[in-house]
Each structure stands twice: as C-alpha cells, then as structure tokens.
Image (tube, rainbow, N blue to C red; front, side):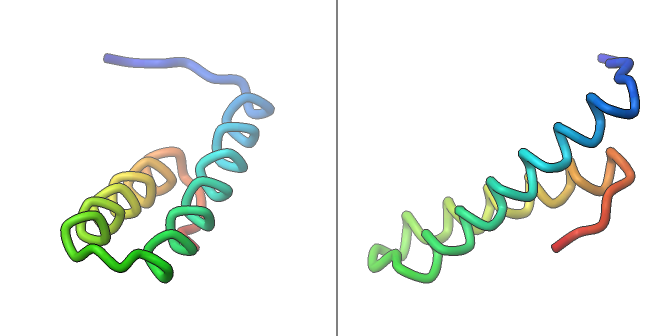
Length: 59
C-alpha cells in the first residue's frame, strides 16, 4: 500500500506518532503486568518504525 502525503500532512502524522510514543513510554514505566508491558514495548517499536519510514527522527 502506498500513501501520498503533503509535507504538512507528514509533519502532522509525525507529531501524532511522537505523542503516542511518549504516552506509550509513560505507560511502560507504570505498567506492573509483564505481558501488558511487553505489548506496550512492541507498540513502541511499531511506532518507532513508522516514524523512521516517514523520515522523522526517533525519540
């Protein structure tokens, strides 16, 4: 699947992904259940991969 984005759309998407990554990191820090924490880590890796594919800097 290919998706064409304007630069403004790409930047907005990157901003949303970075916000989601920050929120996920905070959830990982507070998660007590090991399985839930692992699912959050996988989510963070997916978000990081999307940021990289959009040409943004990982956080």
